[in-house]
Length: 201
Image 1 (spheres, rainbow, N blue to C red):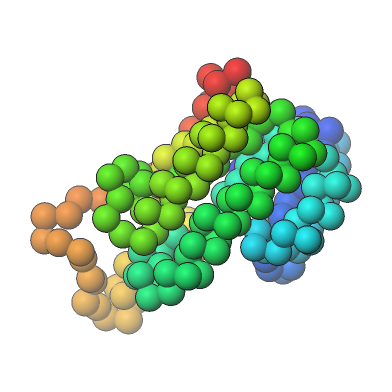
Image 2 (cartoon, rainbow, N blue to C red):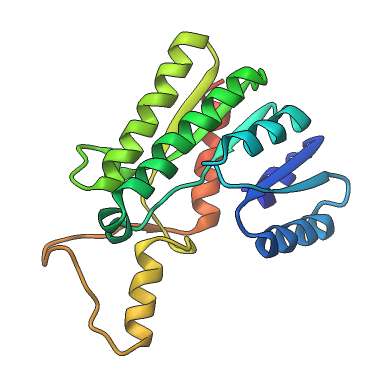
């Protein structure tokens, strides 16, 4: 998201994430990729409302991309409380603070599994969509969700699971023999998000 957003020459990009080493790598890449764009990094978990509030107060983002998620279905089923805290409470935190800081737009990256959800992950992403939709209706702000299918480079997605299983000699687990998977690259997913941002104005 940061790499493609930098091509639009924003005044500032604030990268927020839980791992400092990942943020440092992103910051260094962006400084080479887009030297005219101010880049800030903030280590934070969306569940940490106090820390998140401080970040919003400092940066006052005009556009918020909310992509933090508990994405792995088996992990969500095993740890449903954690999935709720990340995908639901984390979304509440981000949306409420975006409203308080007068962010003009918010885009929530959801999942195709939110359509008629049958898993904890799908249900929590659907709740996230409802939170975003409600905030948009009540505030009149451009807050919306985009459902993505499996992103190849996603750290918590099924592709990473399949790769680990193949590298360890298998077997590759599937939820059903007739299951079909659709994959998109991270670059394709981000293009969809940016196109949605333009179309929804």
